[in-house]
Image (cartoon, rainbow, N blue to C red; front, side):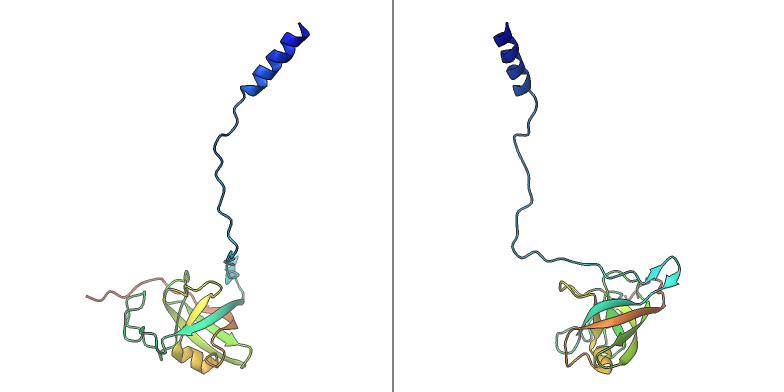
Length: 154
């Protein structure tokens, strides 16, 4: 009888469901961590965030083409690209390495290179002194929130 109980228990436990197929994420050796920049406005209090900045528009074919908001991109204008800030948002961007600052308006989307938070126009990067370094840490403060509206060109 004891053997019958043991056989019954083995049969009972062997019938429990067990996953046959297991899905796992493929392991990568070069994992890129995308860290979101700190929020610029928390509970109505304005904060300064540190962004990693780069620039575009010098010799890359963007000058004279449509920006994401529909206006024509001018490499010498005080503008910038950010992935999520509303179009028309004005930012004070300070570059501690040079002690300079500039106000830029968000009119484009980007940057699309991992680890970068904001792409400044060539003109803004020149005024900040970022050209010499290419990429650098900047302090960013919202001067005026944009509406997100785009330009409609027919």
